[in-house]
Length: 197
Image 1 (cartoon, rainbow, N blue to C red):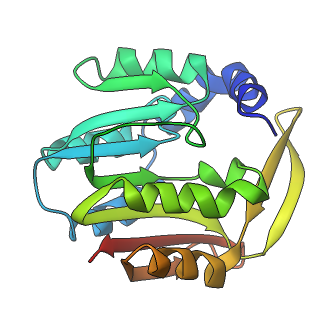
Image 2: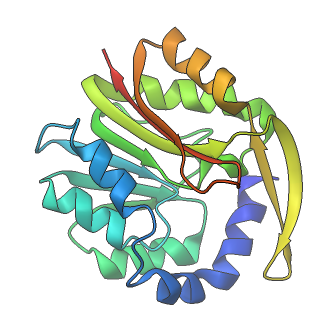
Image 3: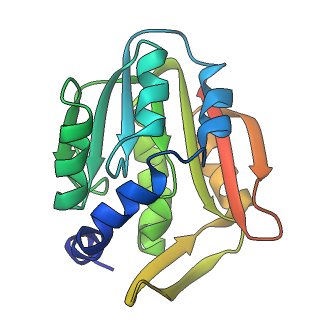
């Protein structure tokens, strides 16, 4: 699915999404675990940041300056309203370029929307955006392949190279896996924390 199409589908549910997650604890324990490996201060990148909220606040509490990117215009508008002191941009991680290197990169429930052929290059790109000793936390599916699913009356695309594929990419780019968990078993939802060694 093209990023612009994905963005317009999330535009339709941006307000609902923000309201649903305003007080949510979803992903909080996992990002807190990642922050245990991360030094305080510096810069963080939130890929697929949505409207911001709970995960951005965790990064702020860790004294990290947050840059957030998302393909949804409406999500970014909400993120700017919620966190005016941080930097948020409408951008596609497949083509996103920055000279900045980050202490922490979070891609929570975002890159699994990419086409299958983009999984390996995008995970590699995230690895390269980390500072030495930097921490990457992201989610993906345990099942290898791609499929479409219907949600809120729209079709959303999902893909994954699976656990073995992701570990191989991380190792190739000099990252060491510190934690890997199927945190929503029996669903195929995986979250992984790795550090740039």
